Length: 158
Length: 187
Image (cartoon, rainbow over the protein chains, first blue to last red):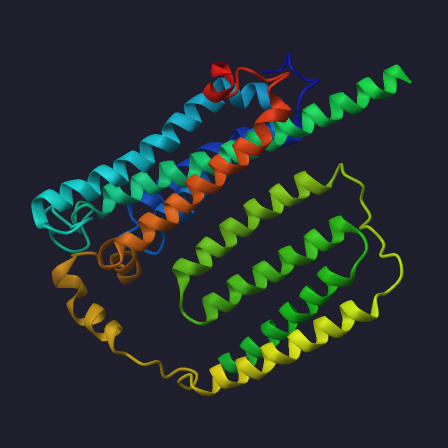
């Protein structure tokens, strides 16, 4: 990535981003997966993962982050999250008689696979929240670029 | 130190920060002071014993700060000055603030005192949560099992608002960025 010195921020910011990005993603996944045991859950974990990608966007520019997760991929992941929640609700409706019924076995407390379908619900919320906020940031970056290029064009015409 | 005293300190800090946000002319400074208010709010949640909400508040505050700075840093950095003060606007604002204060006084008088909540439904959740759901974090067991439908609605609110934002912004992007979303390819 050293060839693209023109896009993004300085070398210091890029190095620190390289060091931090793994920790941020792992901690976000931990907060999501252990949301039913320790404080946390799908929403904060998803926002942490979105923040990791936003950090890459700020440090390296838009093209590098779009080669990792493009706008179309993010939007599809967002829709998959929404669909998983809906499917969970209808499976609960068929098995238990109420929408979003907790149909999976409860397990033993304090173990990872306990509390029924909550872990799947958390993962779906992570996809939904994280990817949609990341796409919002990407759209803002694109919008700003359009506005600035328009202003530059106006300046050229003058 | 007493928790109540710390809470009063944080609340005073938040009120001052909110006043600065409204009154300051520079937009970047306004964004930064609203960020200070948000972090003080997260510390308030921590002192009240709600780590789930404190984590969410910190993380969302960072994200919204980045978005707001990104949105305001290149724009005209000074707020629009008002041309002349309208007497009618000030009077209407005063009347509505008075009405809101009267109703807030009535509403706050009927609330239970601080630190002694009514435990009607919460008692059921606390005593039966572990056997019915199996989750040791009771906040998660309430928002994802007992009240899962509310959480479903919240997730869909995000979905609908972002769809609306894209529908509005689409016309601007259509000329130069046709490869960003599939909606743009169809047109």
